[in-house]
Amino acid sequence: MPKASELKRGQVVDIDGKLMMAQSIDVRNPTARGASTLYRVRFSQIPGGGKHEATYVGDDILKEVALERRKASYLYREDDLYYFMDAEDYSQYGINGSVIEDQLPFLVENMEGIMLSLVDGNAIAIQLPPIVIMEIVETVPGMKAASATGRTKAAKFANGLELQVPEYLETGEKVKINTETGKFSSRA
Image (cartoon, rainbow, N blue to C red; front, side):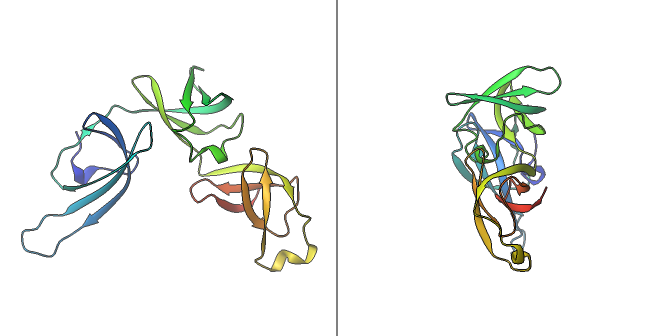
């Protein structure tokens, strides 16, 4: 059972019977005498994605959940379920699309390097690699002299994602996309 002062981003705890993942932790040191350090934690409920905020003192005890992380690859989509395969024992897990809706724009079939979070043998969340490589399927023609400018244009990818990319990129080129910011990173 971790203390509030030991809580880390991404850790899963049980709050009133609901699984909550710590998204951000803000540490405040009050200046008054005898005041203890306060930890303001923003949680997201898994599965479901509901938000919850709480403030703790450093010695408050939280109930940790036995979370198992496994390497997996994305297989396919069937209706609103997305299926992933464990890289070690090849077992398959389905996750509802509403649970992982923030990661869906970056999901590509046969993608590897995904971390699958399991609680009691059930998949509850995924964590994508920080950078994914995707191919541009549609964009306006590139300008040859545009490499020195910072101008961008819209580009469409095979899974429907649309991003702003530098003007010199053309259809068919592969690019690196940051999954945390959702922005173009560089050419692949």
